[in-house]
Length: 468
Ligand SMILES: Cc1ncc(COP(=O)(O)O)c(C=O)c1O
Figure 1 (cartoon, rainbow, N blue to C red):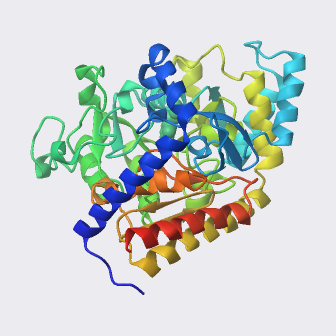
Figure 2: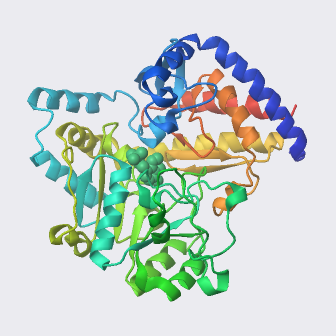
């Protein structure tokens, strides 16, 4: 095994690789560059979501099939971007395409509940061990409505979220998503009192301009993987708190897995203080096990939010859980939307969940994901790169710090220079990746061993080049 090499040297080397590979990317993607120029006139940043922007410009895609996507220059890639965790069914899966075609013939939208909507609700309840659900159109709406229902059910206003977690782009959760190291507070409460007086909450930092200051007070920030911090906070303020929302495995800073017993303790603390425990399974739900994080980690929340992979590529979200909490919807909590339960999305989601993403599919995804993670870890070990891999079903990542992460502050200790060199390197070698270091790979049921080998080979060459 190679010796660990020093940070300054490897960062400098990463900088050289990033410059060289970015120049190469620009040379071979003139059509993306042209479309970017054109798009800048009609779309801010030339894209339809800030997360789609990238340096020097985003690659624009034209089509996808199976495990592959093609950009507007006609280049083929193995798709490991996976539409930010949506495409676990792969692209143009014949069963999903057929289901969508059938709906197109029979009426795309009614704003009326159909038999298939009920079937999908039943499928979600069975799979994710919950009693009742409601449909929405995105992960953002799912967490927004789950929080409203929790507030209505408890009659309390404040919520608790983890530092570094992303739950969508509604105001209540746009705090301390990826706070810069230099603005992180020490342990303080929202009024700025010191740690021991305040339990163990962190400073609440707004993540976006436009979030009203009046909302800062109601979102309390705690560190992930620290049940003691929540216990202290609840002892002081539990009676004011409607909900604790978290991703059971954090997936917005690479991947951070929960410590053994952590989720169970959160459930117990929430039960004791009458706080609604919300699992944000928008990313975990359709990717890390048939029954999502609830099944994989063996802890049931009071409410959960799902989106992304549960729609088989179509636009859908859902939230649900215990009927006694969901009952708030029948007692004055607003939960509605013109497109909720749209037949096209329901058909794609129902087919994905009942015909494609079966238990056997997760066995397959698990095997393939482990091959990918092991392949990358071997290259990391062989070349002494300060990094580690995480392997979680259809999801996984390389994180550029030697030791696994336990919370957001560990993520600040990763070396972004290595990621920003790896991105153009991998893309130039036919592996389509997400442009940000906080993301992960997503593989699909249509990926095969050849796709995994292509990724591992390209990554192995990157490690060799980095440490040459
Ligand atoms: C954990 C988590 N929750 C919520 C969301 C928001 O979902 P959407 O982008 O569908 O609104 C995301 C999106 O990336 C997410 O990763």
